[in-house]
Length: 257
Image 1 (cartoon, rainbow, N blue to C red):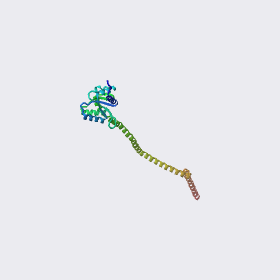
Image 2: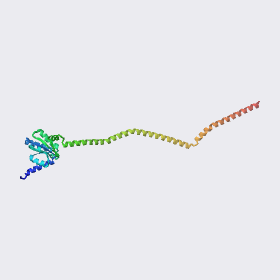
Image 3: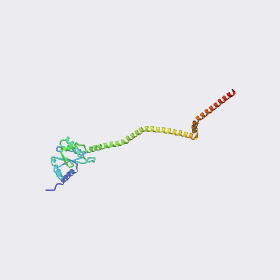
């Protein structure tokens, strides 16, 4: 038995490496596709970030056997395999985008048959690949996730921004409400202060008057107490004088008689 063909060995190594490094692998049968159809399919796959390669089933079986992949039943008829790779803009492709590109093409061209595939080493059926193609792409999911995270954060930021403003408005309203009460209290306090000042001034003036005329009050009291006695004494003196006059008059009449 001769040595294996180096070209075949290289192809087996290539297939094995792609199986190991690709996130998703989709095995198809391309029987009936013409050259222009194949060119259109490869173009759609490049836009999706995938690579579409035609291999002989025997070589693919060798690569699958080395990796213990149970895909023997999928390797029947003309086989072409789609692998996830890199998009034209340099971003990594995802399984959903590649599965969607293949499914969309097969819907418009029945000659492309999706047999099955693998996702992260797990074997997928045809129905599972079709279901995978209907999931939103990774970028869209990440965008929605970012939007879902950003929305509460934006609301929180707006709320945190509004709290000081609302607090300031509430504080301003409270100050204005309290302003009337404080104003009335201050006016009342000022009035009471003026009245106390006037009272103190009047008491001070009275004190000065009392200091300058210390005896007036006592004299007035004594005079008021002595006034009745003096009036009584004057009456008694008048009565004595009248009695003396009457006595003197009676004596003169007796002498004349």
